[in-house]
Image 1 (cartoon, rainbow, N blue to C red):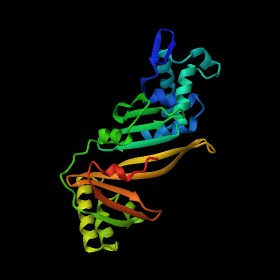
Image 2: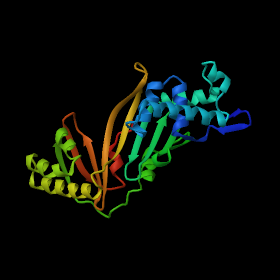
Image 3: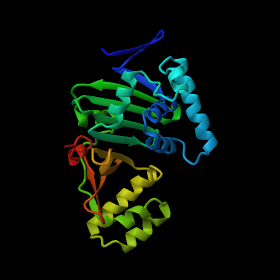
Image 4: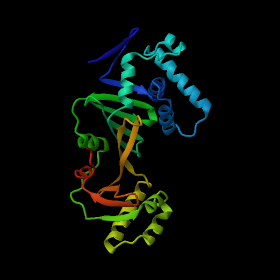
Length: 268
């Protein structure tokens, strides 16, 4: 187990908890200011410049209080974090692959990162508590991890249901009142129209909220993550609705068994 010791404090690198303020401050201090600001905006949207100045100032104060940050080095303009914490942030920012799973009904996010040495980093984010929990593993079953996160119920059988709509029509479904318009303008067969009606009924039960899984890959040339694909999904008492882009203009929606829906995602 690797441990960081500063003053009388120590932190295990195998299991860590950081507040959003602490984590974003460390990212900012390691030279990823733009990323830190973007992540902050996703957690606390539409805030003022004064909010962010206070936010990062409190992040520094918290890290100093825990003795994870050298006040002297910070005052001198040097990176004040312990070397192992700097290494942690670099691995966090330059992970080879990132699988980001969002559960919007509970405002939780689960992120899996494949690091350069083949180690897996798990990050659980509870937005309402502004808390990020980390742990590491040498081996990981991605499907198992995601099933555990979502905990979808498993129906005994699934009725064949699928349909296709355009990307523009899918975007229209962000507003409940547009369901009828999409139904009327789409070129559905009788079976597809029945499937669409079942989907809309389930979507309305969830107040129009879809969960999602995003797959990102690190691009060394640009020194940033690139979004490869995003899969939206919706639990139903009949199974799991899986929504994915077949191409830039076509969205395919199908009903899958809860123990099979993740097979549709290529994690390689």
